[in-house]
Length: 251
Image (cartoon, rainbow, N blue to C red; front, side):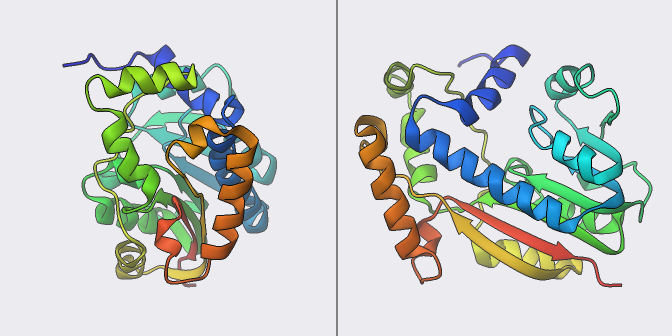
């Protein structure tokens, strides 16, 4: 059994995603970053924002630019230790969103990007975020789609013997994603609505073509972008990797 990744490995992975030498890998993550940042700008300015599961802190500068007070919470000590010296103006704290110790109704916006797929009880996490928002507060959430080709390929990529080849092909940090709770659009929307949220906008991005992504460079990326444009908005958009939601707690 492989050992748990170190703090340095986790941080290196998250930073590499946005500057990957592989065009498709880089595009998949930069596309998500662009959508999230646009959603944050559309939701601000405001008084208080919370990011649940900030990872390497890629969204904290945008949050800090649009909100007077920013809090970042996580249960992963490695992320907290990395963020604390980098963002002295942000409140960095250990907190479990499924049973949060934060004050209910204290945030105007909550960002939760690529987190709920790591939480066994995502419904409890979503209810926790609803409780922390003020009436009229906004939630920006993203999570992978359960049956997207990238998620299915990842199950193969981390098999013993295969992962070493994948790391050699990419020449970059490759770690097990730890996605234990992948959901379909139907499930995510049901959990949001059950918690009380009103979904205002949804979006889907990310085409992954096995082997094409790894070995055809820019040509493969252009093909992926073309396929994404065709799939989005159709009954086949479940093939796209990431699903996004802008939701609001009613006044």
